[in-house]
Image (tube, rainbow, N blue to C red):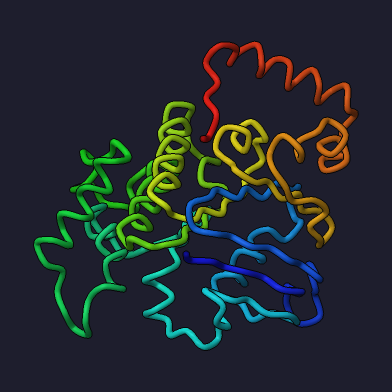
Length: 262
């Protein structure tokens, strides 16, 4: 079983701590969703879990081994990452952009094989964007770019996948496709950690939900135990009645069509 774990983790930058005493565990074969308001440090937490930022205190362990003891190549073979957005000036084609996800499996100076190219095209096909393969990445819309970044992460064939607001710039149809893909990946024993601002997405795909605010994880548990009106009202500084009306609307829209993650 692959496992990513934070123990008493403090995150942030020199002179700017953003979170402390954070304990979190992601196992293979589950979806863990992090909910929290803007500016709370969720992206910083993800970058620290990936080894892109050094912890201010505490530790990050991958399969029981400190992240600092893993080589970048080994990390790339195990951990996939989908950022919110990526600025890129070089005019890669979409297919070449996704092929970058295969670098973790290539030797030094090796060129992508026919197998690598097929993996990249399969990942594009899974997200229903194979027709974008010859397009220039920098010419795409924000939503199309996000789907390409997800395909690139899938091309790594990681054991654990971290996604920072993966549906934020997508239209409704592509949001549904991505959520369904996450469920399918979970069923293939991938461990998935994502953050979102849409509690209904967490309800749709998550096995566990963690609530993050003011630099700490205040609750982590099953989605039914975690997503109460009172907790959501506190998390987003809204009246419980307003959230109840919103959730009632969502329930009405999805009545008779909701599917449990398992």
